[in-house]
Length: 445
Image (cartoon, rainbow, N blue to C red):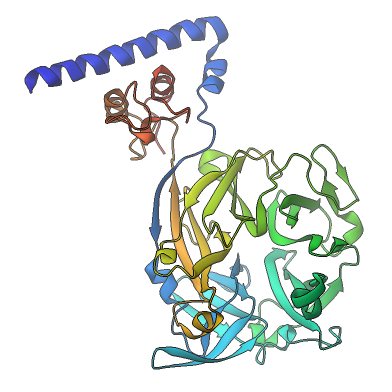
């Protein structure tokens, strides 16, 4: 045992000495800044994922609100202290009898979630007349609106009401009828007193052929007074921006992968596997942007994926698997969808991202009657904080060196393989990983 410990310590010392020697040589040759760039770890790594039962309990057995199709959120603390606004698609209202939902449906609902006392108040379409089928929705074939992607600009709350054509939904494929922009004039009031203006977006959706549309409303990200609006066409990535009032549609520009133009279009060479719902957020600890999504192959693939970028428009990294909803193991008919990130207002730290998803069954009767289905589930994803922080304790020190030394030379499948020590993500723990630790030795959160 003593001999093994001595060998381990000698191995550790040897590895770190070689690393320091290499750093010195490379620094003399290329300069310290070049070494820092060389040692960048690229995309942050997922280090932990755990359910959030306390948050989920706010969306269970909350009669008369029984569940919904989708969940979007925005921090509205400037209007209501410590409060999140939730908007939902098709919503079930009623009661639970004999552990079964007895329900009726509205096309939408909203909720105010007080983060200070942990309470949540739901408002239905009868209380919030702005969400009812309005005068501008004429015809029995129209359904909605679904309140996508809420955000705040210039003291007002906005979202994208999406109107569905039921004839196309069940028939010819032309299911997306219209997209509007809704504007709340008096967000400081409770939702049942809101006054809302609707602005038709005449150039959206762009219809190509049955089942093929280009549209925005997936998410809105705000940075330096620039509003980035995200969307999709047949799984392809779409992003627009404006620095003007969001209602000035002539100011909207679409990114084609190189330039910004007034023509709605997809981003060339951008992600092409996106479902209709995803989110984009900036994570300061990593100085990177995270796109959280579900692949277009859902419900066959109900897993949650992520991509990283250095800017809010990309280019985006290759997909990184983040989470597989465990609820799907309970029943082979279950599947998940409506993936959304809620950052940073539900996070305890900057490296923690809370993601919601909805679980339902291929059996619609089961979906609409089971109290645990057709409602948001939540998972907390934690990413690596520091380059070189192998054990994720907030400091790069000798413990990280020891862990990497034990796994040195290993690859997936080896008995001493440790994925946390594969800091550059190349599938082998080698001198480059030790270099990353050495360059960042002593760094703290």
